Amino acid sequence: MENFSDRQYLIIGASSGIGLALARKLAQAGAQVHTRSRMPAPEAISGVEWEAADVSAPDFQMHHLPETLHGLVYCPGSINLKPFNRISEEDFRKEMEINVVGAFKCIKAAMPALKNSGMASVVMFSTVAVQTGMNFHSSIAAAKGAVEGLTRALAAELAPLVRVNCIAPSLTDTPLAGKLLDTEEKRQNAAARHPLRRIGSPEDMAEAALFLLSENSRFMTGQILHIDGGLGTLR
Image (tube, rainbow, N blue to C red; front, side):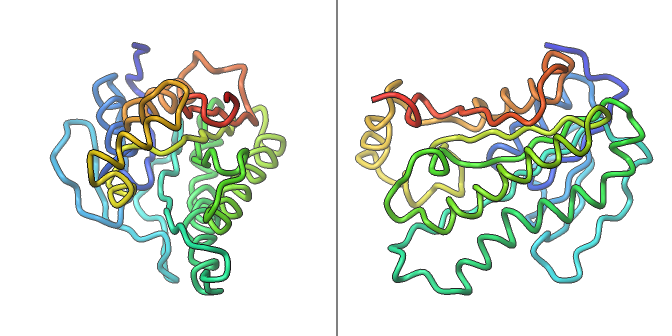
């Protein structure tokens, strides 16, 4: 594993799932990790500083950031699967607020610290449903499609000081997906939809994010990594 000593990273949404798995990995690699999460920290991890914050709150502000950040990872998301005619305007706006506006606010607030490093990396999360049309995914696909557009636009604007990339997972075994995976039958059916015959784990996605934060991806920016078990491209 690459040594991340003397580097500082900010993870938005690190109290569970992918964000928590990534916080553990970064801390194990020697990084200093700052987090902002709506839910309280589930555990104490050496090298990880926890702070409560709700990015969807109208008065959200980023406080106590270090002068220099080597990376930012925006993890908050939503899974609001409904037929199109049952999605309210409020539902649609909420998806955009969590997935796109929240990312905008956090990246903008952290930008001075990111630029100070001269080698920063920003990672956001999309979904396989942007590339592959799926029933009942219209609101989340629209929101994450905007995230992918933001990724490419920021990558162009912020190069060469800041790299910006995005991970597009398929269904991942996180608390957010709990209702979709709460029985063995559901888990087996979800796994069977993937050519690799399994569902993604938080560690799968955290490893991809760790790569994008590392020097090993120093020649990558503006990319969407499809970590989806082959679901988006194989039949």
